[in-house]
Length: 325
Image 1 (cartoon, rainbow, N blue to C red):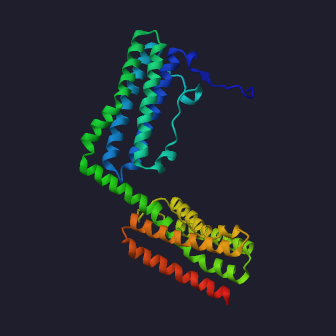
Image 2: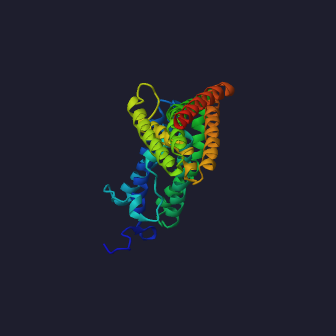
Image 3: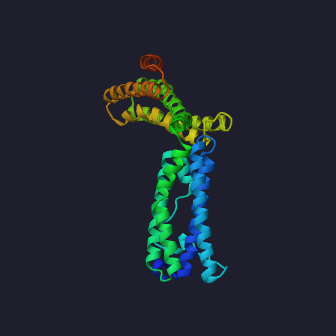
């Protein structure tokens, strides 16, 4: 292989047999992707899983028609050619990249898959001279263009208003369990638990750089601890709280952010300027926690604010008293 020169073939250099083989492998891949989506959604979104099952069945039918045409024109041996073998050909994102982004993102990805396939079939039909092949490719282009209508029809059949409301509610509940709860716990821990050591060091030393280093160490250490604790506490299979890796990241990152918020002002050299800014940041953090509790956990705002602000104020006061003593 010569560096800098692609070994992939150009679309215009493909023979009609290559085009049919590429279409067959592409339909196989798309059917498998749709079935993967269906399997991922089946437990929480059974109605949408049925939609993707129907779309996979359509891709199977397309594949069978393409194989029959290939056998008629070129025999039973189908050349091995896939998307990645053709320069500039559209690619599919790995399923594991999409599955973490929610049901709406999966639906959007499926719509893009259909548009990509339609463009391919139109381009393939345009360079094909055999009448039967041209007709089939044109029919498949029209079918891919109509997949949106098919998906809509399947949704109307399998996803009625109640089912969609249930799926939306389930998606929101899963988001809260996997991301919001661990993230909120981390933000609370990082914002509140680091108040005492940071402000104790600040008032004991009145050295902003030392205070920043202590705050950085406390925030990062707490983030690592909270992240590992959350990930190891529950694998999510029984509780339904989702991936422990996701929850661990949410908890660890938000814990670190919560502590760094009032540690970063101590990069300012003047002690009182840094301290006043840090105190303002603390109140912003605490009110943000109260808002998140109200928004996602349905906790009455003033009750959440009272609990969080009171707790934070007590920890803050303890740090100041210890540092001043």
